[in-house]
Length: 157
Image (tube, rainbow, N blue to C red):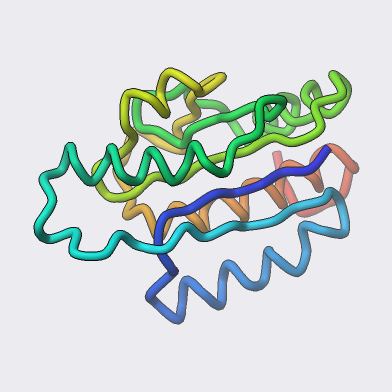
């Protein structure tokens, strides 16, 4: 299985870039992984929140193949522990899913079309994080999940 993390816009802060970079180097040891960046919309200040979600939604859906499983990181998603997330990934691998796409939307969330296409929603917390900070949190949790599945000592219970 390959995991694709799809994000809107580049990561601005160097501390986030550095943290993400650490896990982008570690994850491929366990599973095929890529992080794809959809460029920020041009002239987004002239767009309403809804128009921005719609345009971003179109760009997201262009990246999704028919056979992909699509999961959105969304505050309304199900909350899982790190171990439960690892088991979720393990089930997807065993099921023979070729590509699992996880999307971190822009600052206003997702369009209705993206929600309709999604196979599910996952919440990292009931707290709200910036969509750029979520990138670091997600790649760390993905790395943690892989070490849990391999029985490595990164995660402590």
